Length: 156
Image (cartoon, rainbow, N blue to C red; front, side, top):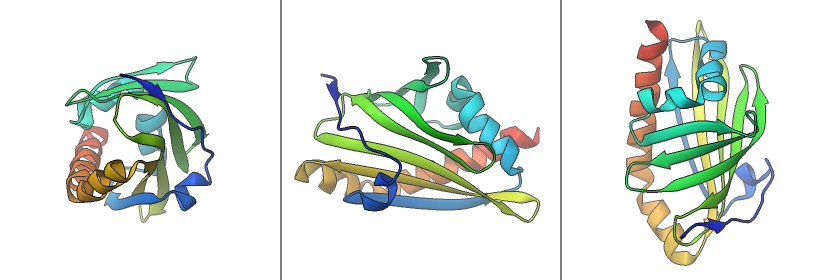
């Protein structure tokens, strides 16, 4: 059952009760990584194995995302600053116990490549927060795998 989450702003990335932060350096330039994140939303299915469906909505102001396992999200893009940051708030989801969620992809030049930092910020019921905290290692592996796959894709 889908439910509407509490709307949060970009500051939630710093204040959320649960913050999962992962980073990795890639060879691709920040602009190429940004284009893959923000401008080729359907392309996420090619490099982020957990994503089974992705499409922009509202002329790019939002996204509809489906994950392996059945999780669904309707999101609002809060920041799309070329070669710097891409962030979106989850507005509607079927994930039980979630109350607020935001994801931020921060891009920083690293030599000729990019340092990609993904922050997953969330609030929810105690069981939701517990499960999310226990999922940290798996989410970290998913992030590293996705960013490595994205880097390979961008170097072709």
